[in-house]
Image (spheres, rainbow, N blue to C red):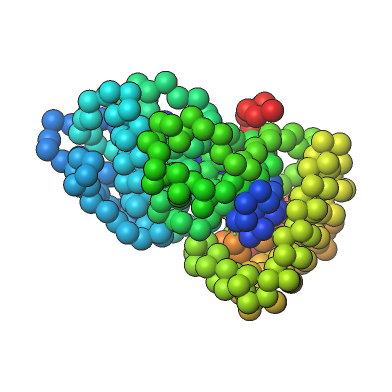
Length: 361
Ligand code: MEV
C-alpha cells in the first residue's frame, strides 16, 4: 500500500486579486492533511473510498472511459481529474496503466462531509497526484507535482488562482503570484502534457516566507461553509461592470502584499498586522462595491472580537462563511479572544502551521 498526504491551507491576504495573472497573495499550509492510499486491484474497475465524502465510494474505469463527476464542489471530481492527468503523465514515461483502489482520508472535512474551507479540494488533488506518481514510480520534483496538480484542479474548478494548490505542495508560509491560466488552457490543447510540465509557466512565482517568532495565528470557523468558485464567479461580474474600481482594488491589494512580504522579511509583526487590517478593508470595500457578501455578520463579529484584544483579523479565502484568521502577539492575552469567540458561538479551529523550511527560494 502506497500512502501520500497533502496539507490544507489558509489565505492570509490577497484573496480575489490573486485570481488575476501575476497578482500576489500570502498563504499558509496547516498541519491537517488529506491522505491518499493506493492499492493495486485485480478487479476490472477501481474504487475510490472515503469516509468523509458523503460516506461514499465511487467506481472508476480506465482512462478514456472514466466516470466524470462534473461538479466543482464534489471532491470526487478533483480525484478523477488527478487520476486522469497523472496517468496521462505516466504514459509519457511508458508506464503501463493499472487498476487500483484509492482510499481517501480527510482531516479537512468533518466525518459527515462538512467542509471547513481549509483547501480540501486542492489537498485531495495534490495527495492523489503524489500517491499516483509514487505508484507509477515517476521521477517528479515538487515543481512538477505542483504543475500536475494545478492542471488537474484547474480543469475542474476553472476559475481559481491555484494558490491553495501551491500551499499544499510547498507547505509553510508562501507568497504566491498566480500564473496565466488562459495560456495554460491554450497550451493544453496543443502541447503534450510532458512538454507543458517541462516549460516555465508565465508569471508563476512562489516564495517561501518565514513568520516572526511572536506571530500567533488564530483560526475561527463561522460554522457556515461557502462555495469559493461561486463567489469568484460573482466577483467577475463586478469586474466586467466596474473595471476602473476593480483595477484600483488589484493595485491596492498588490501593494499591500508587497509591504506584507517586507514585514515577513523583517520579522515585523506590527507591520504584518497593519497590512492584514488594510487587506480586510480592501475586501470589505470589494464586497460593498460588488454586492457580494464577503465579510458576513459572523465574520465581522469574529474580527471585531480579535481587534478588541489587539489582534489583526480578516476573512480568509473567499469569505461568505468558512474561516476568519487573526494574527496576534504570542505574548499577549490571546486566550481572551478564544473565550469571547466561544461565548459568541464561534468555534476555534485548533490548527497549527505545517512548517517546511526552505522549500522555495
Ligand atoms: C479563495 O480561497 C481565494 C480566492 O482568491 C480564490 C482563489 O484564489 O482561487 C477568492
